[in-house]
Length: 223
Image (tube, rainbow, N blue to C red; front, side, top):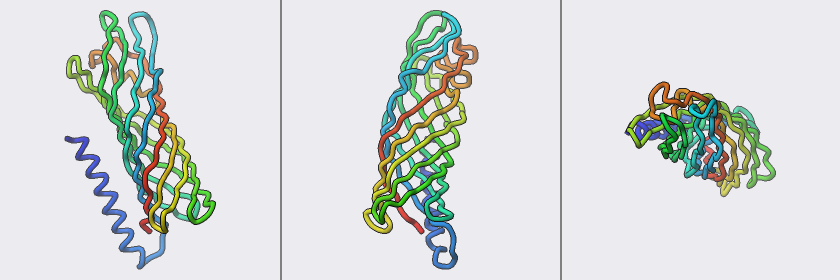
């Protein structure tokens, strides 16, 4: 319920801000504003592991799935933008680990990516607008162990790169095609244990997580 409320509040706040900017646009000059909606397929990361010894390790993968979200972008001058982006992914993580013996659990994992993106646009013509961007922020990760109902979360530094193209249907609305690579640094292990779910669960290593995405969405010129 808290996760759903967070998403609703983010979208409502983004919409309210955009509407306020639009109303004030005629009274004052300022940066252009765009609203982005994302619908993306995230591919699996098939190599998430940490190995210290035969009794201190985990090895597995983090599954992909449907990822969605939104972004609000300010463009201080043509061809460049700064975007606040939120992305959400709910998936599974099948993991083998040692906890008094070799065990295997398919964990439930939820990720909330929050980024500040720096975007560069190269308009080809009024209809086609390629772009690329660098993203910096954090990944809020929640891991649930269905074997014992333990639930833990952690926040890790994250970065990403993206490239795509906006195809404008008219002056205000466009279709977005995009590919990206996201990474949460040392995201697995430590504070987010793949094990019993408690401190010292036999899984004390770290593994950096990579996520390749392919999809798109819609883009709206608010101002």
